[in-house]
Image 1 (cartoon, one colour):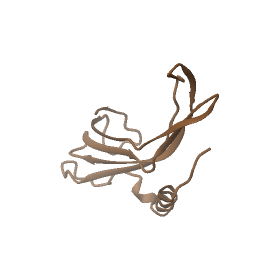
Image 2 (cartoon, rainbow, N blue to C red):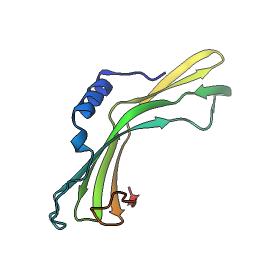
Image 3 (cartoon, one colour):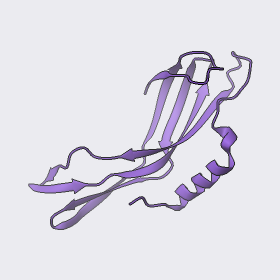
Length: 130
């Protein structure tokens, strides 16, 4: 079950009213260094294994959350990106005896990127490290 919280609803409302923010700045000056890209998305964290805790078989559930990233382009090809979830991922740990606990996480990542092709290309693959 996906839980919608106040921050999630606020972000969805902001995204609905700001569709122009989902594109790279259309500046023609390639060396301006004033280019931003803002991207919204959705991420799902789903555990691939159910661990044993103190000899008890457990079941971990996954959760999804909206994400937001902002990239700053130093030039047409090099950028730095800050990515994070706009809301917490909540995971419950269950066993045959019932609920054992829960874990909340709100990941954030910083990466450097190299974008291929020119800034006017419709599709721009990239590689990143971070």
